Length: 489
Ligand code: GAP
Image (tube, rainbow, N blue to C red):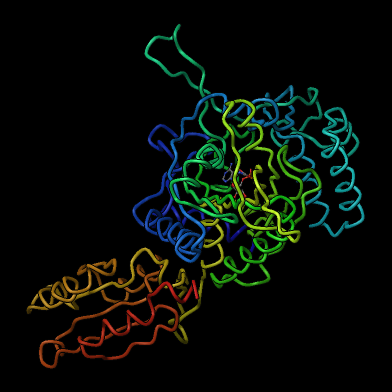
């Protein structure tokens, strides 16, 4: 995958109704995107894949849907008011603002591309150290030492490095003077922590158990780029797994393995995933790892797995004055009940937009088809059938002779179970190509022979093979190819 392909993926996403810049008629809004008619289907399917794997497949994990607005004390307890910030630096000539660590990471990538691995390693080690120490002056001196210039002005006229809180705030209440400052949640996890007791008690959950949630999160990212990779409004799919203190390491390992297997099942290539251990932990974690994906612009974080200790529940207990404890009646090796404790938490957190981007990039293919002087390029999205926006497209070969009626009848039978696409315009080859570009795994064509013997042709997206089958067999083929067990089993 190359940067060149990435540009093509971005324009494909727009041309085929997957992703549009937000408020595009007003020239867009920085790092905010809308999902179009095909994007929303793919995104919903990816969310379902996660939900089924986490909630449906685990008896001890249940879901919730908490509000985006939360009591402001939540963010004091979680540490986000005091500690959720990035080091930023401004270029005095271009007036552009950058993340200091990002400028240094870009330099490392440049060294790697130029084959200067020693330089890359040396800078990486220095970056790790200043990151770990949260050494703002250290970031600045590395930027100076490695002669990093502003990509816009080309100058090295930098301000000092400062911390910048990433939370968006707004006001609640009708009158500005009565208003209370509240925040748009920067992570969905806190909605789970504050509901820990509600769910545990009403669901009679026994440790270890998990609470899962998907939903929007908001971060005022200083530098937003690479399309939907780093957005200011994005969606997270998070699960907090509540465990007995002392067992967190074992569960952390369990979730690392379980989550990477889940990603690999998508069939995007096992080598496209790797673990990256954190050197600098988030303020709440005692162990943390990223699952990185090999995007066209390099390996980058796709999912985070964090051992969050009892940090969040303990702080919520302190600030709210409500006991966040669990009574564990099971017996330890000495035959004594474990009794009351604040559970430890292992969290898995994947960005739905980043997952979407990984799937889009790895399934986008340009293939040469045809022979001799009739060679042509087709663009195909080789998505797993269950994730494709449309599972089947149904085309009458012509608009007359009763063929549309037969096609519509087939759709009427399938549409309760499968998302179907109907099209009668254009040459059949053109229609096939459009479905390839959307990732539709099957195209059914109704022709004149269909009227005589109740058969249709089915064309398979990946092989482009066409075969004639009885109409009665369509369901059988779809049922065997389009089902969740292929991903979940
Ligand atoms: N509750 C833990 C947490 O929020 P995180 O590593 O900050 O941890 C988890 O975020 C995941 O959310 C990331 O791995 C990434 O996939 C996604 N994510 C974070 N910031 C994002 C952004 N600005 N745009 C898109 N996705 C983002």
